[in-house]
Length: 168
Image (cartoon, rainbow, N blue to C red):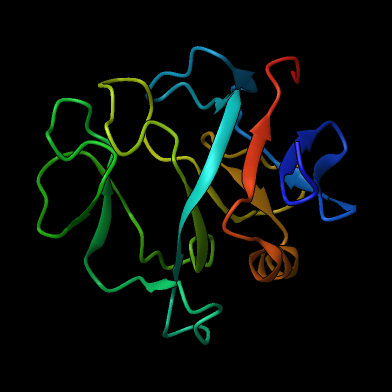
């Protein structure tokens, strides 16, 4: 581990010398993550992308990609686009990235089950805004909005999200 790593602990994510309160999946942490189980997968996950809503905020970094109307994320393990960003119209199971609520206004993408997705292993694990403290996610790691914005400015190319299997 390095100081640039984000390490999930019972107190929150330890990163850059401080703890950032967060919530995780309603299914806890699992080594055997499966699509729809609500779990946050144990392991070492690289940060591979950053999405933002340009109608709600300025571009947070030079590597951030805008979320446009019609941007979706495929979570259909039977489709060839499983665990990839897709565009509407899309007749298979998916998540809408441009949501009415602010949860996905700023989203860091991890390399969980990507870029070569294994069917049923679970689609994207995002780092995004939480609904409220203690409210679990569907498997992602979620933060207070202002903390998420600070974290985005602090991450580096080598930053990883480390989720220990022993964390329950």
